[in-house]
Length: 553
Image 1 (tube, helix red, strand yellow):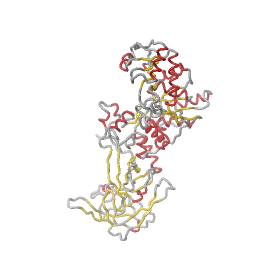
Image 2 (cartoon, helix red, strand yellow):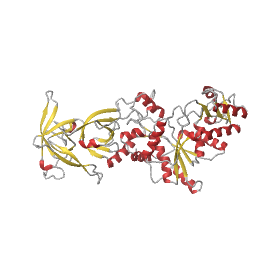
Image 3 (cartoon, helix red, strand yellow):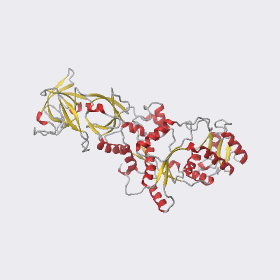
């Protein structure tokens, strides 16, 4: 894990490039962009890109645009647009301009006409299968299309008619005229426009031809005078076409730079695969707390600060590798320890009766967060009957067992020292109740008993306990890299990734809000789920107190 941690004294390679550009006077300010396609929810991989792009223009003079790459009307939706904006803002960033590739459809159409007029693009009547068969291989040149030598006039006429809706989907494309023997397969007359009679979420039915990624991306960067267009490594082969189009169109020369995608083990981040998990109901939705989406992590209780810290620690590089999800959980745990409110919750209750305690009970005080000097205290009801965890009692304990046992004493957190006097069992020999005595002089904060005990247990008052549903999550997949395994990646879904238990909580948790984070003492970190109501408390386990995860066999 430590190998992933970035040396904060060192500049990453993009920062070195930017500092050199600024020092040389190449730019007065840095203009970056984050260009998601609105065809799904953002995930942890996008978080890294968001932190990188927005982080660079926080560090250096300039700004970052949010530009939606909405050139495929079939897969895009305004729901995704809104979720993306919400996720970026939740992470703590704000864009200068909200833009859409569809803003530039008229300009991109004019660019396409310019390429045709220069003899650098042609309309091809070949089917997609025919075009694929003509591509060749990395070691074998492709073949020219039968339609490659159409006249400029014919191409202008056909492309105009494509725009006017005269042709059916897939019947024609506009291709760049480059070189079918080019060593870079993407430069072998790539498709620039295709016909799609589909309703667009912003432009409606105005267009029935749509630009391909390569026809839209670099030109959009140029229109926005983006200085540093930062992509992941899979776009390295596209850079040559990116530059070719800018050069031939004679427009502002934006520059593309690539960094390595950081994959996380025990998950998938392909939008196509995440969509499958949602549509086939392997998860409850895009924001299922087991999903690597930003909305899923937010619902699970991860904080924006911890995700930003994780992205900073893994840094950026030119070589792809897999990052241990344990590092993300470490960052989450570190931040939650500082901010989480402490509460007592019993998961597997064992009843304790204090035989020498009289009266209706009392209210005790306990700190909300010992890490926060300004965290304050809360009131906790205490009475004759309590609940503790079954695992905190052992009838025949080994040596150096410091929890409760017959004749043994422990302290109850923020309360009293108690001693187990008698074990009550049912007809089957199961322990159902403990009879204990308490030491009145041992009250926390004013202990005059002189008794020292080594064990401290959490507890709740039996009559005041509030029932809560607790959803405990495990890894969504059983293997480290489900996408690389044989067969369908869904074959490796962990069948026990969700465990639901009924727990018993101190009443202070009835006042919980979605924004609050909690440490259930001695259990882990939790948050209120969006499914919770005033009648039913539901909590999600965010992460354990320490990394005790082991793979399922």
